[in-house]
Length: 410
Image (cartoon, rainbow, N blue to C red):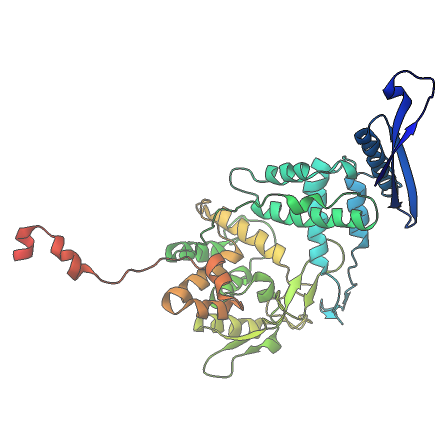
């Protein structure tokens, strides 16, 4: 930057009216062309400041957006831009040539649900360029109430980050992504809990007698819910993976019955529900030896499997495809509620999975639990599924030295 002093008025008697400073520089403009610019001021510093302000204005002019939509509008555009491969489903509910690229349909549904339920109600009316780091931080922290909501906050942060990244890529937002500087929320450590033997017996009783009492209207009661609970307890797999088991995945010929976990059920909000030809986590396909009580269930169901079971599913609905996990969850809740089971005990299909992991970790190793559950990372199994109850070694022979003297002598 150069500075030059110029005389403005020869007849002026005041120095500040007679002389002016000019600040000059060459500046690469927002269009890529380098130009010379200059600004005047009564002092050297004021001329320099005037030039700097002019340059900043020129630079901001190049970053002006043609529109300033609301965050809700940007979110809709972002969702529309996320490609979700179409899944073709056959008459039996199996995915035909499943997609290998793009996000899963259920992931997109989760994103859309977070936008609709959480982001739009609180931030949707704001113009996108009104969003600041403090705005994002305050919003995300508001989702955690009484120690609950950390999962929603974590997922909402991911979605909000992607929405604003989309806005930046399409010149709808002129600053850096404000989500990047949001303070990390430390989630309290959650202690996984398995179900006790007493609770398991109560659950078994509840599902066995559900809808069998006199005077209960509705479809004829069956053993399907009780059978599903037994398979969940004997395998430790997810409910969607249990319902995706086909008879071709079952081997009961050897000394130990075996079940192959090769797929899971997907229930998108829109479009057909289908069987995905790999489990929730690709690469976790496995063959599980199953205990005798599971073999008994499978043998009986193989005999009862109707001709209308065109999907060849171990758990079949009336339409010949696959049962849906949401339906099983509703039935389980209804059965437990009808039995009067203590509602402080949370019993879900996933609770059976934690119960299996806890038992295997106590009787065998954490690695055995991870292998059964299909986890490649034992630490994940340990943190989320195993109820840790550490048994201390027997040190009583040492602690006896602290006993009263009379007892030590005896």
